[in-house]
Length: 294
Image (tube, rainbow, N blue to C red; front, side, top):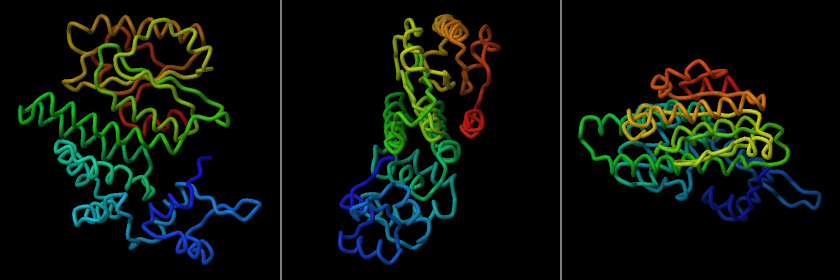
């Protein structure tokens, strides 16, 4: 379990160390105490504090010093996900990483499940950007910058669930050599880490090569593909379809030989008719992925 220092916890809460000590003594916030009496905190302690104290004033580290960000937390408290998705899209296009982080990290801190965060806020927000691209309101470069910023913020959630020896399950998340966006793969990784998996992510433009050694070395028991149908997804461009299908077919053969389960996420599977039937399960939403792996 990852612990946060008292100093870092106080900074997140926007209070000083002496106030934090007083709060732990009177039960305002929970903590874990060592045999020597030292206070240790986890991110769950912070999330529980915010959940139990609806009117608690969040720290500037979460971007709540402005009226805009206070409104964001109002939307989070009221589960107004469509409004959060719109702000996420707009802020990412403005390269406003503070607001993007406030939405993603603030929702997580508030106790919104990672699958709900992905399905109701992040994915819809990225589709707002995609629709703007399809209607020629923005350029491909603007869409790439937006998606990269959102991806970076979502990926930071993995820091709360490190790979460790206590996890008994391992999964490999695969992107394609011709596939630029990482967001779907990263969201898959976040879901898996939060359900107790050690996760290894190939990232964009990975040279997949011979995966046999990787599957053995990392004791992988499940492979997760993710492929969307957005314009930036080069793996589904007509000229690359055959190459993508060949990659999938090769990996499926490795998986079958190693008795490794294979899941495929995203709507991009519709572009791969030759390999469509080769998967153990498919998912479109991240709630579906969660139900497949718990």
